[in-house]
Image (cartoon, rainbow, N blue to C red):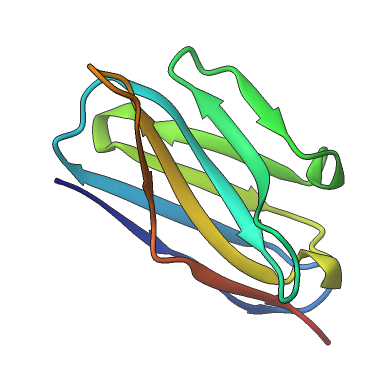
Length: 118
């Protein structure tokens, strides 16, 4: 079994910063990707940022230059540094983990709320 525990969400003013963390535990092997998705009210869940096992990164156009994804392999933890936050970044942010094996396994965190408002 795999568990993802997220932390770091909250309320921040426009232009502010937050850092999200997601720690994975359990039967962690064959990590393909770790990443962050978000879902705003009334909208579909969308990819925010992703980092592969080879440390390649991929960002949504809306966050390029403002958000940075990183990982600590020893801790099985992925981070999302969010700078210059905008009201449109308000959403529930979900951690995502994709594992290789006999079949691809996908896991999600419980979500953490990020609210950008003055």
